[in-house]
Length: 406
Length: 162
Image: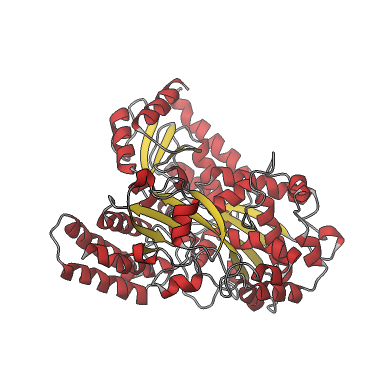
């Protein structure tokens, strides 16, 4: 049995929102230990662990924290729970199944960077997550894990739960910050990055739910233990969300040495109805990359996927069998991007619509390889010029799908 | 319901929601959610929007900008049950088109429409994060997965009696 770092307690509680039950199962051990260390040492430990962001970008977490630590004044920890990348549902599982683990991670992050307050921004559609996390925050406050002088120390910290209202772009960190401020979720120009100027222009560390859920174990068991799992550049485990044409879709927490073949055929029971594998959309069922049969033995981690024109992204894996037409999936993806583009920057607002137009012609059989080259050209320009990852993303699925379309 | 009394009741409900908040702009999304949920027709009326803008000290157009940005907010009245069918890629490959077809047939309405009895409104949604049970949909706060025509019929039937 592989070691579970973040999902270990899922299904172990009668009341996942209970702080006492989380404690019984080994929870709230990282916090007192972190509070006995200096903030700088906590940041150093996370840095040493090699933990990288689990939301999509894979930025080293400890490094991110180290930018905010020395800054003065009001600071925040923003937990990004606006899980909207299609095919991704790991943060929901964590928030509904082990909310205190996420909360403990946020409190430790707050202590490490010297923040006074944390926000959890949960997408509006996640009704149950909002309910569970809100109750858990209340429970943590009652037990003294939140509030003034936490566990008898000088450290005071609070958490507020905020919700979105239906917008994919608000999962982008600066759009999320705009939304937290009560505005339309248009992304900001970066730099300055949120770590320096975030919520209300104050330094704000933005971390994904799964990233933060890794923190308590790193503090309790140490960076060396964490580093012993996975690969040198992709330490620890990752939750893979598998959907589509497999026998057992679901979420699987595995070390990042697992291959695509093992994930699909060993863990998910293979292709549904014994059909043939065609491709998998890995890293996100919109912003991910198509991997084919020749990529089945690629290990699902940051560096190996990058070498194969892919990306680990959110860890979503959409499996497609021989009967799925890739051009149909591309059209679906482009409809998604057209709908979700905030319209702020021109290449994204116009480019997505143009690509969808051309794809529609291709889908009807009225296109040529030349037309697909035009699509890729537009997507490339968007990739180079758009403000935020939304406009930069379509190039990834479009370019990796080319072999099935042209 | 007495039509004449409706605006009074609506004002009352809006006032009740606003009382729970500080007049800070950061609260606008939470306020709009609660106001929308408190309305029988599941939407934010122009009067409600003006009241929120006044309360927060922002212009109505700024408040409208927020409503129009987020897909969960509606400016038009909707049914008691809001059906949101996920159309993102995982649900799409597992048959969301069939789900939409079934719902259109069972309810006799198109996407964006409300049934004559004001019970159901049919909408589409981006990924709802329940991809392991695709194809899926939400009705109000509840999620429903592994949908088939028969299952959808049963769910809708149950709501007619609910």
